[in-house]
Length: 390
Image 1 (cartoon, rainbow, N blue to C red):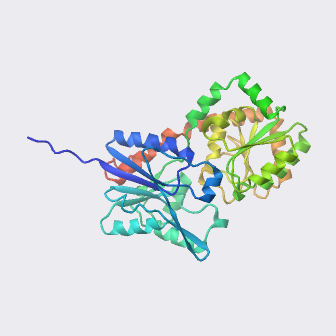
Image 2: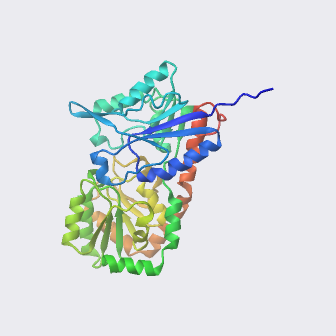
Image 3: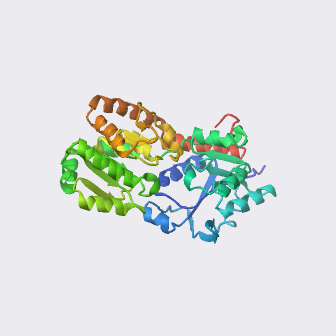
């Protein structure tokens, strides 16, 4: 008797751009889903001008790059991702939760007519509410009830989605993460000779070094960072600051580095290139928006100091004040921020306590856990997983 071949399920992820840090996740998710009989496709937009400034986008050999089209409507910009035909035949199409992505409306309409099921992947709401459009957020809240499934960044994001009256049993909290194993392995391989050469090259003489890593844009509060650094230098005579990143506000750092030899601007460092600079640092300064950077802090055991802000990304919930990092009260000014950092620089026992907390957190928030959760959610969404898999 001839056996009928079982068709593999097809799941397609569509993302507006492809940040460099997402490559390990997509590669691992593809392998995990393939192991479970699911073919993963990836369609990603080539970077626009603003994204290109951050110099952190990448490509993936098995993915499909597309050129997004920007459409201006009054003061708002919308984006058309020209892949509506490319996703036909997918059992599930996973898109970013964003009211300005016009493809989402097309796919949701198709879903109502028996087309591919749609899943949203996102924060649940715009955590940078000061920059959000009121009408846009209202539309986002409305359409966020329409997909078949939800992949929420964190448990906090999942709670946001539940408050939209979306069914809890169709939400997967993926525990957003990056490839921290690669960071830890690189840290273990750093030699004293490498560190000595690095210090010589960048003229870093102090042991009281702090590091900033991230995009250089408004929400990161770069001017605040520089003012706090000056206040720190007044308190700690040999304080030095390393800044890694790129973006619209990088001229502020470039000017500060030209004027002060104790401020070192390295530009962007991708992957594990930043690791040796963490090794020679005692603290990580992120006085503005905190997102996935908290995982750098955990993996490399360099405590992070931030401020309680309304516009942090969801990953800030991983930080536990006094346990694996420091979150100063809302309204903390640069001088007060510097006082807290100065105290931490001078208190080895406090830093060791926070480093121990970082080690624990690093074992929890991993890309392996994210892939496992995401894959379990995909199987449930396409009707192939046990009821309690997520």
